Length: 171
Image (cartoon, rainbow, N blue to C red; front, side, top):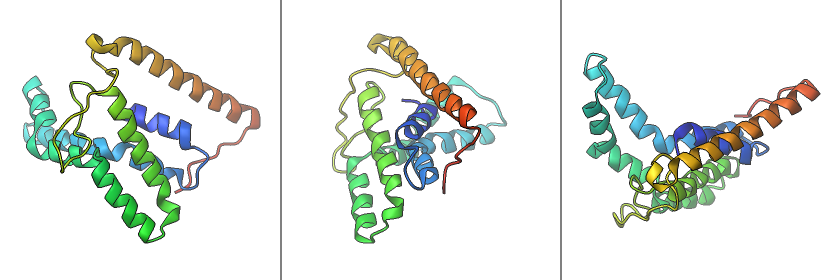
């Protein structure tokens, strides 16, 4: 699933949780390796974008290692144990959002899936549908995904309009 969809679905599912702002940040962090590396390469190449640059970004060794780590249930489990041991309950929303991101990606990544048990294993478990590839229902998934997100956001906007108050995410 693309990064903006992770952000929106996390808001839809966890919007009433305490510290949702931290949850929204955690929803996009697993994909930040690609974004940050792409920005770095973009600046290094005098602001020219090429297919080779994108391919280099997506398949870069450092980027893959960072992304695999942040999409790993093993790394997530270690972080969950640390937060639980330290009794940092106010930050559990970070764990919920992060795990939600991993689950969504396991379901929606086929050819570009991350190894779920990294660094213990590089084995990839392909998802059931692709969020982008038309060969694996990507177009149909995208239409349903965006329509549902739009419907939920329109519903929230209507509720805000009716009550004339906006509840900003709490950090």
